[in-house]
Image (cartoon, rainbow, N blue to C red; front, top):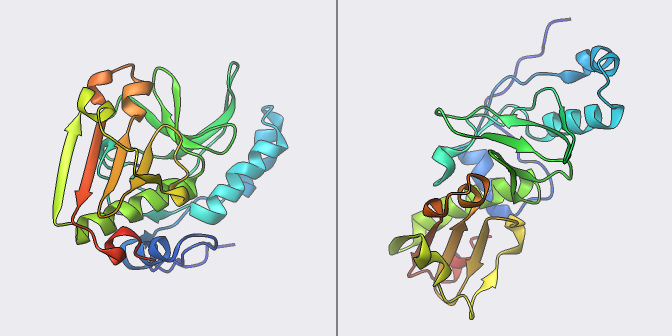
Length: 220
């Protein structure tokens, strides 16, 4: 049976912030996605557990084929969110690709054994506790860039020197290695994934979005 036509206008999955929903539906594009249900029997014969096949299928149903604007770090993130065949790493468990890189990179984007979205370099580095968190972080970055009066980039030791005492973590991004922080009139994004995953402290970076009003700080 022929695949059904795909509308290029995405519908945001349930459970996201209104900010992320708007971001997906106004900035995203939906392209054709693979349906891995047709590979189920072959994958089972190759020893892939049924539970892992279900994880891949659930990811595809929620995120597969969604192209979003580039992230402000990680050379833009995956070009299109799209899964592929799960693989087992003995020390970590089963994981599967989250989408191809936009440019040649020293790592790949992966969904880990516990569902975290991260990068697989010299070591597995979970960036956000789920793909929802990654998408929320993209939406927040786009929103902050639009409304901030200043954007400051800091790197290396200056990142660890940031005083976050009066800031609160932004919960919807589900930060693990990476994190977002909300202050009285600013937002701070901290990108530690490359520094950790590549054992490269020189890659540590933070972006400070200043001069934000209430809408700029939250935006839905």
